Length: 69
Image (cartoon, rainbow, N blue to C red; front, side, top):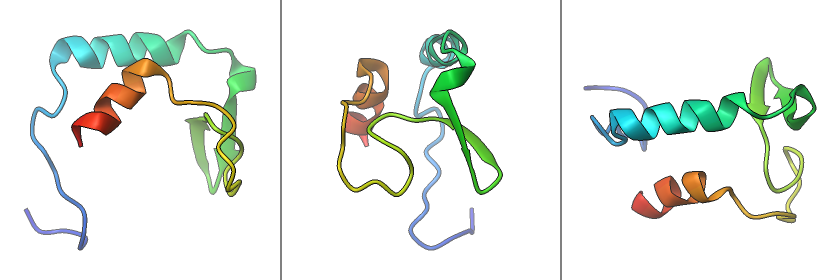
């Protein structure tokens, strides 16, 4: 697979069960938790985009994925 330098695709990085759990986790957050930047909508932890200071930890289900990378 060709693409952007520094970007790597890892097939089946998360299992179907992990995918369903992540989608359920995302869907339970209220609209107030979402932010929009550069035309993207995202759930944000640790401050607003551009903030250098981390104000809160990642949720455990997200941190587990980061730890696997």
